Length: 196
Image (tube, rainbow, N blue to C red):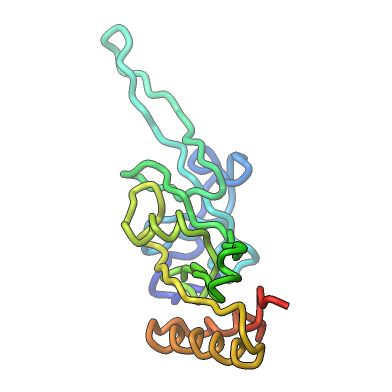
């Protein structure tokens, strides 16, 4: 994980009872850092090993018998969801490439869907329903953290022409969307799904 030094507070410490590790639910004690988004991760800084996302253990006040009794409650969240203090957990896009159908091979092309993580040069291929939710800014998905795009992908014709057209389309997205490094995602496989 990389963050500029101005976007996090380093060398914070907890004795335990404040946070748990999101993926395991284990109560965490030790060093942590806090990002400009008020997210907390294990380690002294983003460069300290592989930081793990921390969830707060929230204080909740109940009022039984007219007395105030604080209780400690935990918020559970699955690893593929994002935590927010004010919103319900939202789905994080997961890799799920669309496969061409027999009709697509008749047409010679099909649509592929991708998204980029807004604060990193990370790309993934997603399915059409996830793309649609990101485009529509659906509250059930982390649309503000990912930007979607779609491309027409050629799969029939002369293989050399198909390769070059697909490569040109990817390069165009890389330039127009400023998705630097997007072409590297394809690993030169611009004839993927080509009808043999």
